[in-house]
Image (cartoon, rainbow, N blue to C red; front, side, top):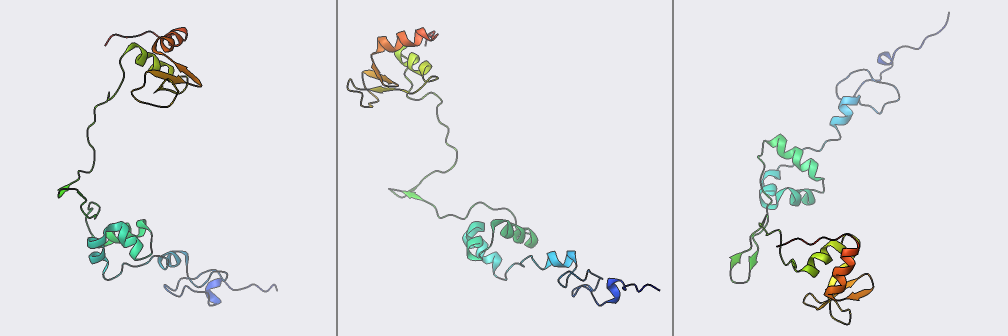
Length: 169
């Protein structure tokens, strides 16, 4: 008669937490209890720390990840909040505004014929204003394209050779 080994439940291999039979090669816990042991519980003073420091500050304070702090917040039923940052002042006691500030789309654009040609040539490489010596200058009289210093007439002629058609403003 062939000897058979008894099932794992008869050999004393049970989960230390819930008592379910486990493999003899596991480390004392079943799969579900093993994952439960990996999650850190929220500290007692967590709510106070989050109100003072915010989520990112609490993550640094407790040496944990932001996702763990978010899970703790959800478990405690805390509502979402904005970032806890000190207000920033600018000069004369006024607050700096944060967030989206609407800006005009076309600022400081050169709508002269040479400016339109330079904008067209920027599809092919770097083009910017400079002095006659080639030093960058936003109010310069010349243009620098690749390694060439060009006047307004020269930049328009080069752009026209590549298919530039000016538009009226």
